[in-house]
Length: 141
Image 1 (cartoon, one colour):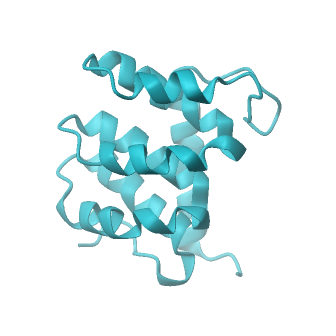
Image 2 (cartoon, rainbow, N blue to C red):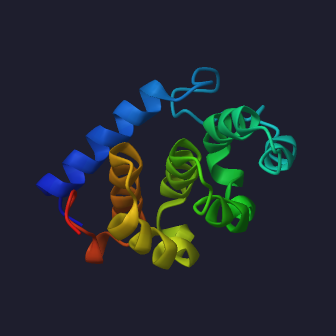
Image 3 (tube, rainbow, N blue to C red):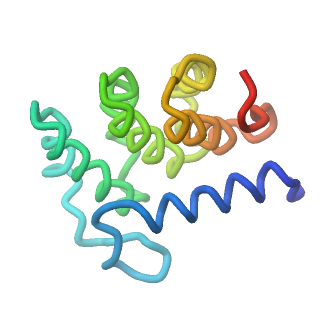
């Protein structure tokens, strides 16, 4: 896949999101943190306390190579009432890239229906990460 403006813009947005995520730091230069307890963070995703869910999502992505088993829960969180939860769930799916094909339909729907601008941009970037050959232009319905 040759680089184009959409892919470059998607990458830049992801870097900005990475910088702003709570709990960033630790791990190696790649951002992967081998000390992330995926099981504990996944259990926290069921919390009724939104702050706990947001913190868990803000740290879970660092387990990049161990993230795939959480995909069903991440897809479920795309329906959450809080747009920040939806955005962070989408970011974790973004990290999975093409391995997250099961999430493409809910992500496509959110690109069309999401009211929160930041979350909507993340959903568009996630779509581009999952299916780069059929990606959506950012900001379009």
